[in-house]
Amino acid sequence: MSVKVAANHGMGDKELRKEFCETLIAMAQEDERVVVLDADLMNAAGTKPFRAAFPERTFDCGVQEANMIGVAAGLSSRGFIPFTHTFGPFAARRACDQIFMSCAYAKQNVKVVGSDPGITAALNGGTHMPFEDLGIMSTIPEMTVVEPCDAVSVGKVTRLAKETYGTWYMRLHRKPAPVIYEADSEFTVGKANLLRAGTDVTIIAMGYLVAEALKAAEELEKEGISARVLDMWCLKPLDVEAVLTAAKETGAIVTAENHNVKNGLGSAVASALALGHPVPVEMVGVQDEFGEVGQVPYLAERFHLTADEIVDKTKRVMSRKVTRHTWEKISNDLATAINELRSCTNDVWTF
Figure 1 (tube, rainbow, N blue to C red):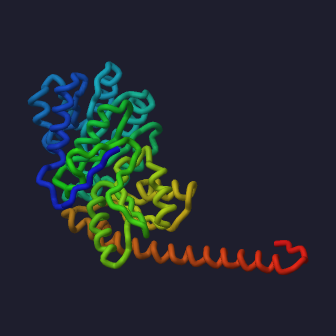
Figure 2 (figure 1 turned 135 degrees about the horizontal axis):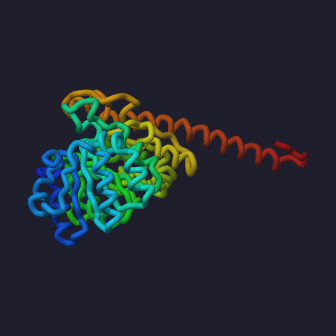
Figure 3 (figure 1 turned 45 degrees about the vertical axis):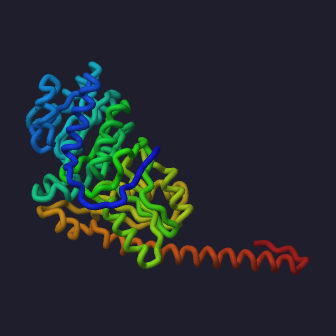
């Protein structure tokens, strides 16, 4: 794995859906097995250029998402590599049974793309705002679940999906996003990307919240707090090693996701910590609510998905970390005192 972090994290000038389509076209030129299916949203997905280049390998299935997944499973069974697209809630909720039975259970090679994740659904509102898709897809056995955060990662992750056999779910933010990676970065399935070193606390983020996590780390540095930042772009399989290493080396964790904290990144990280190395954890994300209509900046404030919120949660987890370490010191001091007392007497002590 070789990741190169961009020096400037300003807003990119390329829509992520354009990078997605360009990558699909490049892969299709290299491999005739690549096909694209959509549920009447090719304009939204930006994949019309793919249809123009490969009309015989493009299937617009109309507003029938479950059927689209069934068609994709059939194409996979004949050796094709299908990429399907619809909005996130329609992929994860409406077509869940077909993804489970026809794709994952049948061990097919289908790549499901759900666009407009979380608050990026914006004016489409709560009905189109998936705060649960990562959780639903992650509970399906053998699924790979990912969320790239910028144009470079969209291209890299889309290629990884094509090159790695199995059923995938990929969140796709359609519009421009802050630049996080240099173009020659390389990604590895199941491995988090270290974006910033730190020793006091670790912020584990994905998708829309990655850029916010980096902003937060910069603000925290001004206050003398050294924050490590990990991009957990691959939620499943989770990079448990990176999570546990961060816990051991920094002693406190903050997760940040554009998703319900229940059954999302926060839950996955907390589970790994509980089993491997418990430390204080705080979660930035949607607190078990439905979405609503609004522009992204408003929704980010409404659901507390901001750098300021990450800073606040980091300070909170740091205060818990100090408390924990204080009790550890008391425990260690008590053990030392008992041992010294034992060494001063010939009596038998039982504790």
